[in-house]
Amino acid sequence: MAVQLLQEVSTRLPLSTTHDKPLAKSACTVCGLGSRNLYGITPTRLRNFPSLTVSTSEYLPTRKCLPRDVIRADMGTEESRRIPRVLTVAGSDSGAGAGIQADMKACGALGVYCTTAITAVTAQNTVGVQGIHEVPADFVASQVKSVLLDIGADVVKTGMLPSVEIIRSLCDILRTYPVKGLVVDPVLISTSGDELAGPAILDALRDDLFPLADLVTPNLPEASAIIGGDPVTTVAEMREAAEAIHQLGPRYVLVKGGHLPGTNTLIDVLYDGVEWHELPGSRIETRNTHGTGCTLASSIAAELAKGQSMLPAVLASKRYLKDVLEENATLKIGEGKQGPVNHLFKLSDWEKSSTQSKFRPESLLLYAVTDSSMNKTWGRSTSEAVRAAIEGGATIVQIREKEADTGEFLQEAETSLKVARDYGIPLLINDRIDIAIACDADGVHLGQSDLPVARARAILGPGKIIGVSCKTPEQAEKAWKDGADYVGSGGVYPTNTKKDNKTIGIEGLREVCYGSPIPVVAIGGISGANAAEVMAYPRPENLKGVAVVSAFFNQPDVKKATAAVKSVVEECLKDVSVPNTSS
Ligand SMILES: Nc1ncnc2c1ncn2[C@@H]1O[C@H](COP(=O)(O)OP(=O)(O)OP(=O)(O)O)[C@@H](O)[C@H]1O
Ligand SMILES: Cc1ncc(CO)c(N)n1
Ligand SMILES: [Mg+2]
Image (cartoon, rainbow, N blue to C red):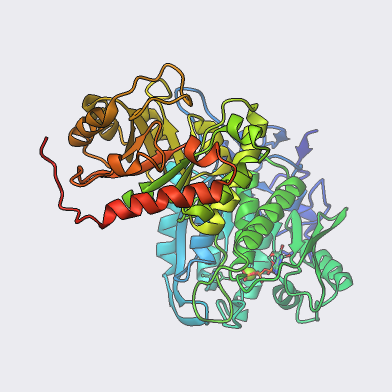
């Protein structure tokens, strides 16, 4: 439906005109009120609001008069892909939980490109605010224009606006270069109790910025300050405050309940002038809440920039914030009372994304390879077999499953992994990289006909262990080049475990060792009876141990059988291990 201005206004209205004292001449068809907060119509403005018909007027009424859901993400074409964009006009928080840093990280986490105009640089940490260095208004304006005139923004989000001049010049720019959405977080006081913007800015917020806003997001103290000091400490008072703030011209008001006293349920109140939404959420027990407000507002801006309408954007942002608070509930950053929000927790799981390989060559000493049919014969589950082998002294475990379907294999791997983790022993998966990823195992062991090692390394990253079966020095050299951590070489002796497996003997094993730049574990028919021969001194320096199947798992007592082989291997290590790398 077209929205028409009742009135043609050829000159700018006098600045004294307010909603409280409507000028008949500037009354708007939608809300019936006049406003001094009119902003200019430009070709961009008209493109953004195609349903608007504006005669020859230069001005539009306040934001709340516009039709809803006008923000549309322009995703461009295949040749020229677009990304939703948010411009944040806010202060820098050196502690990086709030401010510009929160905005950039929250937008990034939600897939939106975030540009910045910095209004102040604060020295801030988990204790409080130690200093504020304000950026001059004209330089804030330069930053905003640099962004809007080139990159553009679907939504502008404001945070800390420390001076009236900054607010006024921002409003001037937004009237000249309108954006599709404006989210205003009226930052006044940090949660540590430090003033970030004085009460002097209240008039400028109320009179100039709010009427341009799609959403204003005060917390309880801010809501109280905006409406003139009346207390806002209950949901009923939050509704009254939202109503009063809505009268100032924004399209929506979200009064945030993070400061609601003594409840387990935190309620945020969203109001659009007609409908109320009380949005509940459980209070999460954590000290890391520094920046929740900035995070919520910038997430909403990001969702709006993607094309969401207001209520779903708010709900999605609350969900994101809940995940962030829950995932980082016990994180310890800083020594002060309030820790920062950790927005990029999904990317910053440094333990998982470690570039350091967990592989230690010594772990190859006593390598247990499970065999599903043997475990079945002896009536044990894979994880029981794994526990027994580890208790007997196995230093690394590989799950080799040739019968179970994928779901069962995964379950076996998951329960075995729990056992191995309890003992701090690495656990690898034979062949199935998908299972290894699904259960977050420590790595995989691949055969010559499995997924190529280089591909496996590309998929698993540097932090996982990759072993490769090799029968020749050439294969071992290639495994190393492709990124493997160790080589499994054999069969050293004939074995029934692997059908049609060529036996390479001790000689073949040693050849592989001499040609292999990476550690080697011997495999194939190894037991307590022959392990000493395999590990006999002098031996190649990189021959690190023996891998055993039947001599562990085709036995009545796995723990005892493992311990028996272990004592043989350990005995061999007692021989002075002067490296012998000559052939
Ligand atoms: N402990 C908590 N558990 C769950 N949600 C919380 C918690 N603290 C705050 N929130 C939520 O975070 C959002 C921000 O609210 P809050 O009132 O804390 O903002 P704020 O005071 O502006 O934050 P800040 O100034 O520290 O950035 C709201 O949706 C609120 O319900
Ligand atoms: C820079 C900055 N903006 C906003 C807040 C509110 O949390 C803060 N603490 N610091
Ligand atoms: Mg806040």
